[in-house]
Every structure is written in C-alpha cells, then in structure tokens.
Image (cartoon, rainbow, N blue to C red; front, top):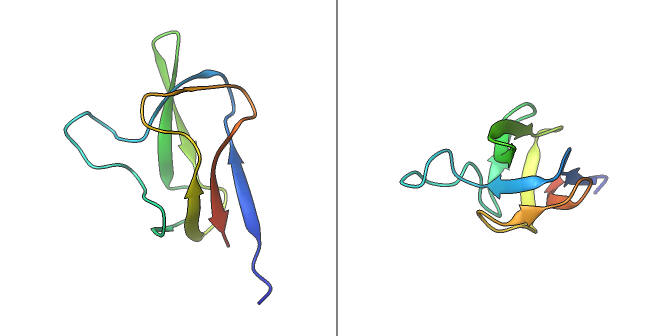
Length: 82
C-alpha cells in the first residue's frame, strides 16, 4: 500500500468544536470517509469561528482533540489516511 498518513494541524489557537451545533452530530468520526475541502471541525478564537477543512480525500484514522477542548496553533487535531 502506498497510502499516506496526513496530520491535520490547527491553523490557530482556540476552542475546537467537533459539531456544527450542540444538538447535531460531529462533522467526522474516526473511521469516517472525508473528501478534500470537507469541514472537519470549527475553531473559535475571540468569538470568530474558522472552519478546518480536509486537505485530502481519505479516512479519518485518529481524532486527537475532544469537542470543546482548547487547542494550540500547529497542534495535531486529527490524522487522515489518504
């Protein structure tokens, strides 16, 4: 197999949200398929929300940060097998 494991990094520091709203399911789950450009999670910094998008088509193999946890800039959020 010549597949690559891609680490999705946080573009900034803030609070990570895995769901679009508290009463909705997460954008992605471990083992789920994603398409390049799909929203993986949201980051909130100073009341501004930023979408973190998938850089590749692939399968989410690991989610490193929980919902509503603080994340630092360049911290690994999740890994995608492409």
